[in-house]
Each structure stands twice: as C-alpha cells, then as structure tokens.
Image (cartoon, rainbow, N blue to C red; front, top):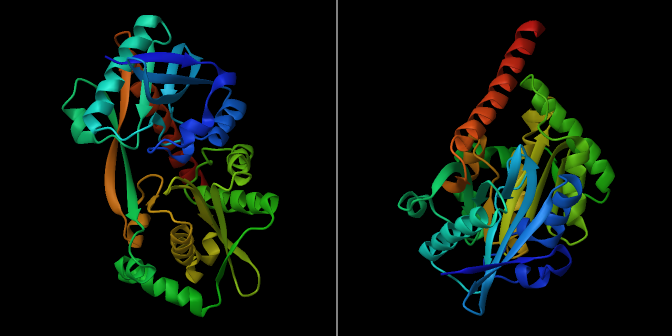
Amino acid sequence: MYNFKKIEKGDIPWDKIENCYDHIVFKSRAWVGYLIQYKKITPFILGIYKGESLLGYFVGSKFKFIFTIIASPFEGWTTPFQGLSMVDPITVNQRIEIYKELIQFLFKSGECSYFQAADFHLEVANVAHSTLKYEIYPSYILDLSPKIEELFINMNHGARRQIKASQARGIIIRNTENINSYIDVYYDQLMDVFNKQFLQPTHTKEDIKNQILALVNVDKILLLEAVSSDNILLASLFIAFDNKIAFGLGTASYKKYQNLYPNEILFFEAIAQLKNRGISMFEFGGRRSYKEKYGPVPYIKPRIIASKYRGVLEFKDFLKRAYYGFRKVGAQFKKVSAK
C-alpha cells in the first residue's frame, strides 16, 4: 500500500523533484510555472510514501471543466509527458501499481472526478496487462549515443543528400540572439505552414512566446534558425530538454525556400548540439511522416485515463473527435473556396 500526501503550492520541493532519476523538462519548476500562469491551472503535487519512507512525487495540475480534473498533463498544454517523479528507480509494474492506488485515493478523497496521466517511463504492453484504461500517444525517438557521423549515416539517402546540398548553398544554422525577433519570424513561418493546409495554428503567438520564455532563463531550450547566404531566415526549430532527454516543441519554415532544404540541415545541427550538451535521447514531439528521414524509431506510449462516473471517457473522446472533425471540415471548405 502506498500513501499520498498533498503538498501546498508554497511548499513544493522543486529541487528534489528535479533531481529525481526520471525527471523530464515538463515536470520542472519553470514549465509548471508556465502552465500555472498561462493555462490558468493549479499545480497538484503529491508526496508518495511507503510507510514513512518518501518514494517520490506525483506532478500534475488541477482545474475544472464541467467537473474537477487532475491531469498530468492535459491535451492542449504542449506538454506530452509528466507523471511520477521517483527518488530511486522502480519497475514499470511498480509504477503501474502506484497509479492504480493513486486513482483510488483521488476519487475516494473527492479531489477529482476525472484523471489522466502520460508518463514517459510507462510502456503500453505493461499497462495493457493491467486494469488501467489508456489512450495511445504515437511519436518517434532518436538515440543520440552513436557518433554524429553514424547518426548522419542512419538518416535516409534523401536527407543526407539534402543536408549536403544545403551546406553547399551556404545555409548556416545559428542559435538565436534576439528572442523576440525569433518568435516573430517563427510564428510567421508557422502561419505559412498552416496556410498551406487551410488551417490556423493550434497555438497563439503569445502562447508560443510564453513557452519559450519559461525555459530560456533556466537554459532548458534550444532555439535554432536556418539562414541563407544573403541573410534570409528560412526555418526555425525549438527543442526543450532536461536530464538527458530532449523534446521537439516546434518547427516551421517558408514554403518558397523549401528547395534550399533548410529543415534538413536544421534538424542535423540540432542533433549535433543536443549531443554536445550531453543529451542522450531526442523525442520528436508527435508522429509525422517527414520526421522518419532523420532515422528515429517509431514508438507508442500510453496515456492513463480514469473517470469516477460512467460515460465521461466516451464524452471526452466525442469532444476530441468533434474538435478535429470540425477543424478538418473547415479546412476543406476554405480549400474549395480558394479554387
């Protein structure tokens, strides 16, 4: 049996949480601060005990949407993973048992009626053999432990050719020195990407700015831009990292410069810089086919979902499908109207 003790906002031991072996950037004080300030949620942190021994923490947030929700994290937060932060390594099965008892504790104590958690250290196979309900999060991950020459060789032929062509055309990659200018250009490039699909970006410019500013001052973000030989900004990429794991947060470029292959050389330089920082894994931030060229491995992770009441899980799934359905229909309408 595990015991859970709620930690008040002013008493959250961020230094201890960030020193846990399974820490990732989305459980940091900086990122949770961004969620508090700009997503208007309340941090919900628990100490996890076995008897009197502190085993670790649960890092999540509490908010109300029809009913009270505790999420770690929730969709729309640009936060793929949070979950448990354990002092010492535990098995996946132990992690699952903690979640099972945690859900019972939250529902019995009246803390929430709906719970979800996406934990980077959980595996689908293990959750599938438990009583927990879950959704699937597909993405790609790249092991950065090989030498940079080997990582280059592991990219497909097209990516290698495009990187060499981009280098020959004088494209350089630089770390931005002007954050406000970087954000302006990135969002303009992002609008160009979504306009091609007759869509609007899922995040506002202000939201993206707040994500970046939350991590800049603690040096947990890589901000890169591809620049042409005549100083035109072609593409942008930003990546969050901590505790040897990096996560892609955003990439965008102008359509008219795609023939210069700025994205390919941008990703290659990002991989090199992450390696130099001691990062061992690069998670690409969702599954899109264009990412396959860089040699990552496809994988799936579970998102645990639980409701105190019947029908809530089905209702949430309906809302999600409705949102993306309306978004797709709107894009098709704009596409037809543009002809």
